[in-house]
Length: 466
Image (cartoon, rainbow, N blue to C red; front, side):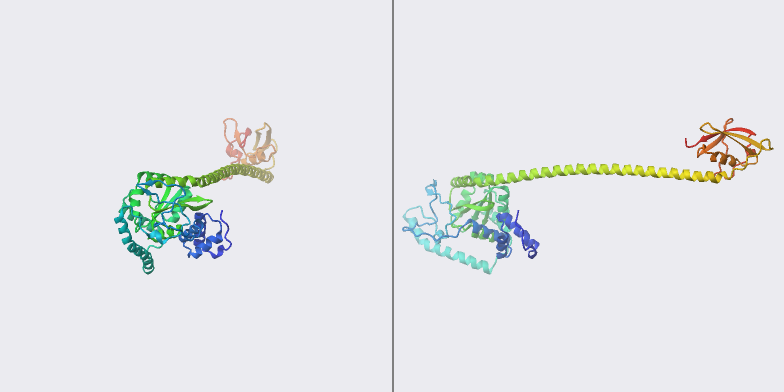
């Protein structure tokens, strides 16, 4: 977790992203330091990373100690332990993080022949020293006057070097990491692997031999490709020069081993000078053994973080699943509650409708009671004696005049308290519906005489709602 930035308002989104990337690559949590490093390099992320690695990995160079009998080749320092020899030549590769650059590093290798070789060596020495001494300043002045058009293209520098390397020395070499130095650091940190950096100096007399014989060795290729991330670039390119300044090489060929240590990508070994493939493999294996513990700790920390994250994810998923189940239950309860409320509302409306209909029927019965004519006297001419049997078995008797409309019969039956609200009147034999109810199709029912009911008739009332 990175420290919160107190003055985010003063930073653009791009600058904030660069600060976070700087912290991720270098492992630092000091936001102020990260911002200061980026501001000093005009927000150039890769340059700031190189400078940070140079400050943390290499202490300030100490002046060389005077010796009573200086060695004719000061860059051939003795190793902390005895190194094997190949073809009579000692392995010159060594780890030296504090050795300063020396003028004597520019001298050619000591001749291995007889007197003639030594004479030729001393005759060409002044020319070689003069040429080498002048080449670096001249290249520096040339880069100022004619700046490289690819200064802002680290990936282009790397790809260009790979192409030139394969054109000069063939394709038998360790698999180069196809990316900038910063990307290689980030990849090695993410993969928890050692990063082996090779800085190529095409002008050095030992470079061709190292590239053709050492880097093309099958055993070395297999070891590097299976165990390390291998990044290389030429020091004549802007990207290679920046890395050269960060790692502070003293002699060529130059290799540096970088590994994640205490959360930071740290250079743990520098190997300089020519060597054989076997001796290089031995030294790389030794460096890996000595520093493997850092990666073991990092892997354990990462595994613990991953397990913690997996456990947290499982807990979150279980919580979400429980939450979804609770939400589903709540939705089901809500639906059931809403359905119950809907049914209750429908029942209430139905009851209200029934009650309203009953109220309307009651009013109709009161109104229709006035439409029923007075019952004629028994024995009066034109009298029709009607007996109506209700659904509950009760019998109604009433006399009507044959000139009365059948609706009077309907009103009489409808207004009786025991009569159904909706009914139909029929004869017994032959069965025939008596059209006594006034309707839209039958607004004026016929009279008793028109329907030809007998003077004494038995009728049946049928409940239509039963």
